[in-house]
Image (cartoon, rainbow, N blue to C red; front, side, top):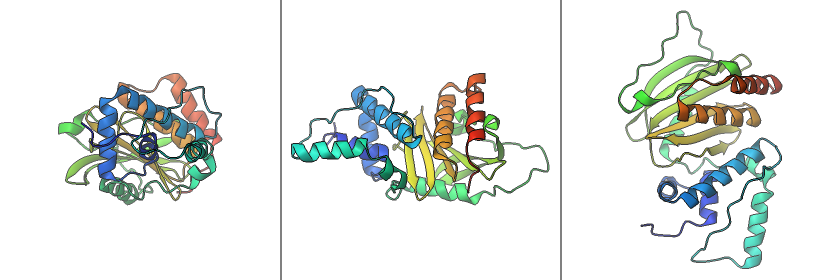
Amino acid sequence: MRDRAITFDLLNAYVDGELDAAEAAEVARAVADDPALAHEVAALSRLRLVVTQSMETPDIALPQPRRRRRTLPAAAAAAAFLLFLGGAALLSGMDTAGTQAAWLADAWRAHRAWPAEQERTRPFVPARHAGALAEAYVPDLSASRLTLIHSEVRPLGDGAQALLTGYRGSRGCKVSLLVFPSQGGLIAALRPFRREGQEAYGWQVGGLDYLLLSDGMESRRFALLAETVQAGSRRHAPFDAETRTALRQSRDRSAPCNA
């Protein structure tokens, strides 16, 4: 039983990544137990991706504000909702990672630690992983001109083990994918994390959390990459021809990374 109502504002803050670890875990549990809440989070997450990609808003059913114990005056509530819908300019510069759990900070440190300039002098062998990580999905991103060059199992957060795979692009891109036992802050829908030009997307599949991170990749390209990897992690299957073409075209039309 939840101690408080899961309001629209709370869901909005959850999707934006503005909640602390305890609040995010509370919302994630509520969403997992309530299909209506899950639908609202999925709609909000999709809207965030659309704004990031500078595309026209698709014809989706936007979630309505839920009944709250304490409500704002009607005019203030309406103004807040309109600001939410029209806040594309604010979203691009919003600091949404500053209050996240320790595992997110650890993930960014892991992303920065592995050397993207390393050269392969022998065939690449991914790190061995067992236990919960044996089910981890490691995608082939060569269609996006990203080559897997790094793999390790490393500690993350409170003693959890994470599989870190690192990809290098031909134009300065560096992308990391971390897979680790669920920490309770992610759900099946993509959740964005943004701060000072850094972008990440997280989601959950089964008992595993996935976090895709990059510095400097164009937001539209990175959002498509995250959507593609998320879909692949649910099917555990290679990308089809149409998906590979979309990834290749997205890369060719984007600017070089500035990481």
